[in-house]
Length: 341
Image (cartoon, rainbow, N blue to C red; front, side):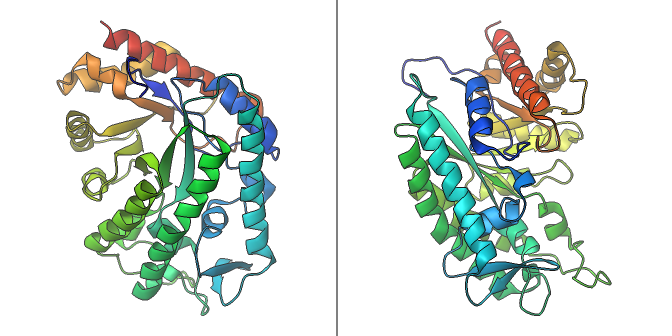
């Protein structure tokens, strides 16, 4: 937060965006999410191979090469054209960001980037034998270490693209509940992989989170689905906060979020369903305020929230995705009004 300026509730997106034109996407996002909101470097999965979450994050790995096989991305002995494409797309996106941000009269004070966390990355990569890398302890360890080594250079490039902006990192773990419950299927589909020990999950997260902070990230959050969201474990690993959809949270999970707020941690509330028609702003604000009040949290603490869509926006039309960001800024304004009494 800029010194001397009141903290305000803010809005951001989860990362994915419709279309294939990064310049158009970046201009739209930065146009909608000026200060105090948080624009983000979009992911455009419509572009195909290399723009998917596994390929995009896998392109950051150090001393581990990946390539696309019929069943998905596989760890291979040497880099190929698919990895080169993924690296080229990401590098081009950062260059486009630099051009657009550099032409702005008053660039946003923050920028968010997204990457896949080590557990979901291991679930999405395959070994030479065709099995998921998640199956093998050594592979899981190597992927986490390689990702931790690779984020430093990536953050350096992003920071150079937006000089002076604070870099916020969202680490996505969409598969974490299945990873920890042992319900991810093997390549054959006939059985499931053994659950990954909880302490190993925490250690892998801590390794990558520490690397991100050393590389200059001012805030690191782990984004997870609401079902069995391991909120306490995320915070124990050293994350600055948690991003989670609100719709199906249990009372226990709300209590964990309240404890996080009271401990000064960040809560990113996935409060806005993205299906048309979008709900009224007052409805979304009330869906946050009611459990907040029931938990005994002060209204003033609403100013610390970041609000996000409940899901990515890649499946929407560009105009619909833009409308979601507009609505989110209105929700943040509504929370601020409550915070100010």
